[in-house]
Image 1 (cartoon, rainbow, N blue to C red):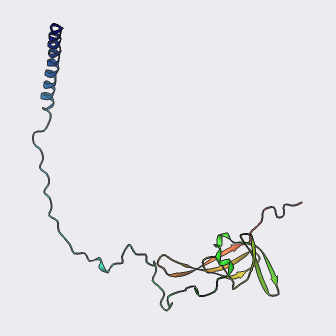
Image 2 (image 1 turned 120 degrees about the vertical axis):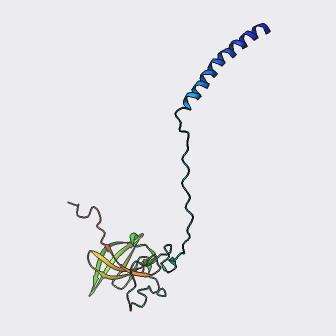
Image 3 (image 1 turned 180 degrees about the vertical axis):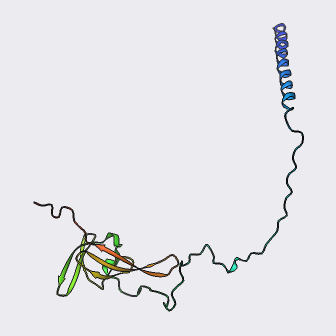
Length: 174
């Protein structure tokens, strides 16, 4: 067995030597196309410190009003937080549905459904969670003036409308 291993080992070593010669030749030839001189790195500019002068500028991370407050406004509008809440102020305006109107004398009332309960409201009542004061009631809608807080914490007024709910199937009867 030993006699057989020695010739096999010599044949294997002889085959490897031809591959090593090819490898050495490849390395010599691939080295010919490379540039010999490397460009030096550019000079580093020294750091020049400068003083920060932005202390008088507004802080970009604090919310602020886009327009300046009007003079003589006295701080703007604010809701009466001590006023007793009315039942419809417990619901968001999106959950309230105007389902009809009712007239008694000179007063016009709106019928508003919240959950499964029907409420009668008129001008001067409050509804919705944004301190919504009813400004007008007519046959087709309720007009509200809401007081909401903006991102800067200031109170602002906005107008909202609660339209009459048109029920499906009404008038489809023959």
